[in-house]
Image: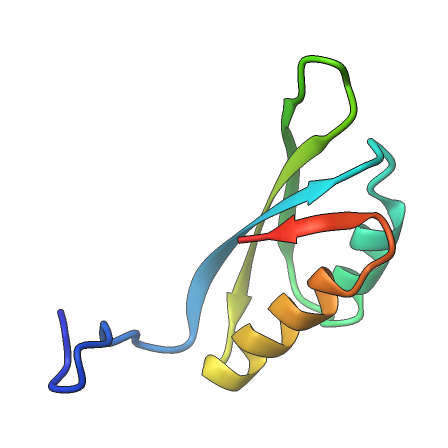
Length: 86
């Protein structure tokens, strides 16, 4: 449901999905980062590019608020092998 500011209203805590595109199939660094939040998460390899240059992962985890959601996004984006985070 949209709020008055035009942004959707998100009720926290909620389950949030991130799509992470990496240049490696090795998810260990991403997994290590997610484990620092000490809560369950789901990490799945979703797609591989035609020439196996890029690997797409889906990450699902509960976020407590908008600040934490944005923090996780930033930390994932800053990982060495991450090309794009959505």
